[in-house]
Length: 416
Ligand code: GLU
Image 1 (cartoon, rainbow, N blue to C red):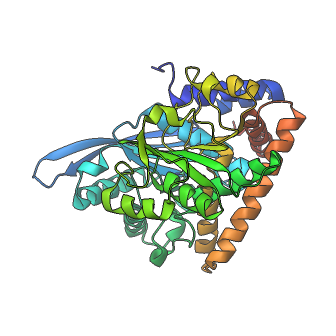
Image 2: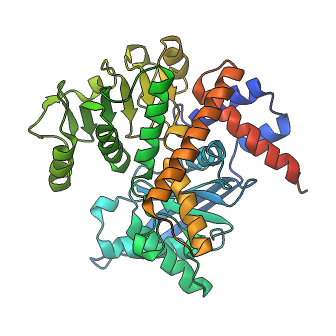
Image 3: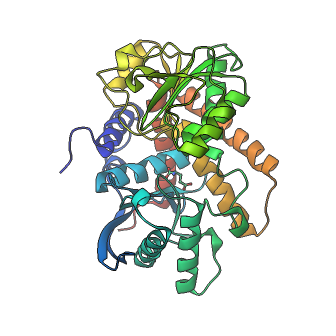
């Protein structure tokens, strides 16, 4: 069933390397190599034209030793069981790397949200929530936003869950609208985590972020928030791409003008302040910082040797294949791995959950300051582990996570 380069294979490949180097005991390895619980649901939805469509949805929990499962719900035509399993496992490692008290989960529905009306999306989301009702909850598994879902989707999940449970538990999901218990700063949190990671990585190379050149692959939520924040911190974005194409300007792209253009046209293509370029070339440009923020499996054995960026900050999940890791390492490219670089989102999701449970809300400045604290702490811990085990930062991050999750598993013991 597994194909050669799927995301779950890529996760398992890193887990194997990290487990070996760390000396993980066999029993725990066997537990971590697969999800703890998977739910597959069939979702009949009444479409606007009167016919019924039946969608397939997943909710997968990889590990819950350190706390309730946590992870986004993805709406995308390319969703597969393996992709969602990989996402659940990555969230186990991510929440452990930033040291928030959650396990790893992920959900998804095979659908094309861009081709559906708001009414259809609402009915689909509510039916999904009703079906996974028994496995989610503030103390069980807390969904959040991901590709193809947004604050409105989370509001529908919250309402459906609460209607069925006869409670008001807004900690059941994160990424909610701010007027419904959402946290200030959540919308830009992943981008802010990318900014913090980039700054720390440059500091490790003894270089300032101000004036550094930057290329970003992908201009969805993560790509465009990263572009804005890095630009405001003084980096010079010289290239950016989206699903329709790529643009470059060696003197620097005016990011605020681009954001305005993008909000009107939904693409970066055709922006006047830059020239069109081949999107494949963006990944191999000689820049200080490359942020792959599109999708998985972009830097592979085919192009890794050509990557000339000094630092790669992985905004997307799984953008680098396992075969590319040693190539980047031997070429001296400093990679800030996904399970650290894009963990800003899940960190502020944790802050949202904490605020919901306290019924006491923080100012945006407090959210951002705490995020800096969590992310820089995680960054230092990952690099200390990397140095200790003389490995690359990705395996360093996995080892740090394995250490923390194993510790929790040991305290709890196996219940058999
Ligand atoms: N979309 C991110 C993920 O699943 C974060 C989700 C969340 O905030 O729970 O990794």
